[in-house]
Length: 166
Image 1 (cartoon, helix red, strand yellow):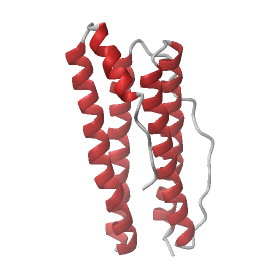
Image 2 (cartoon, helix red, strand yellow; image 1 turned 180 degrees about the vertical axis):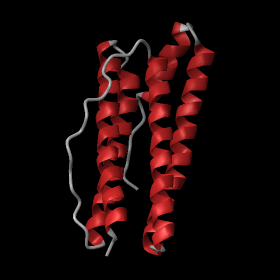
Image 3 (cartoon, one colour; image 1 turned 90 degrees about the vertical axis):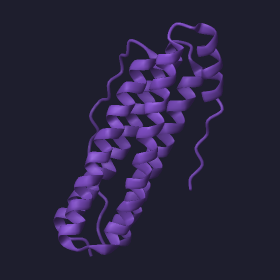
Image 4 (cartoon, helix red, strand yellow; image 1 turned 120 degrees about the vertical axis):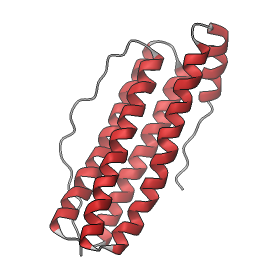
């Protein structure tokens, strides 16, 4: 059984994962509205991954005798000035998620809840990958600059991205 502080923090994180999916769908919508279907696909796949993370936490809470509780999600940012801005915002979002998982880990360590510590380690490893991926995309987009042909090719590459649940 999870203690109340840890249960509340896990529920908050579960809801934040669904908010992240919501935010990535808003980024996808911006990309689609600007006729960048490949970039839109990238964010749609990212949203699927965030929903998977939310469901993973949901299952864990319920498996540990808790009750996964959903809250209202705030409206995500919907207006962007560029594709690069969406990736910078995505990186900031992932950095925030990493901090949240650090906080969850601190609570689990303080409570000596070793099962939750083990569970959270998967997410900590995942966050290293997430932040690195966004940093790489930002580097690529900065390198591409105003080269429309290269941007077109890069977008076509991102159009092939798909998310498969692990």
